Length: 129
Image 1: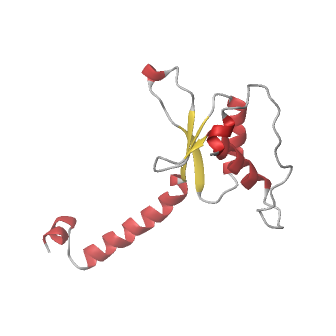
Image 2: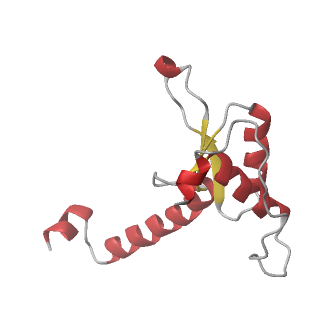
């Protein structure tokens, strides 16, 4: 029913909107959370395995990246489109910060290697078990 009313609105016609929708509670959100939410609502996408932000403005992409940098253990990277797709709008991917995970992966690898050697096991022999 609401969709049929929208068809009656002409381009440039003024419409009424509420000044405030009191649904967020009484506590203020940190600025980086508000910015990230606004950017994702405007130009974000969550249909891939990681959230994506698509925007042609370098200034807005920088502002989005700065806001995301306040979240722990995540990073923002430009998705490479390849040399054949130079006309595509730039996309930023938000994902776990792999650089922060690297020391943990190395520590796990070292511990696993030591345990395997202590048991006189190799990776291949372990798979045969």
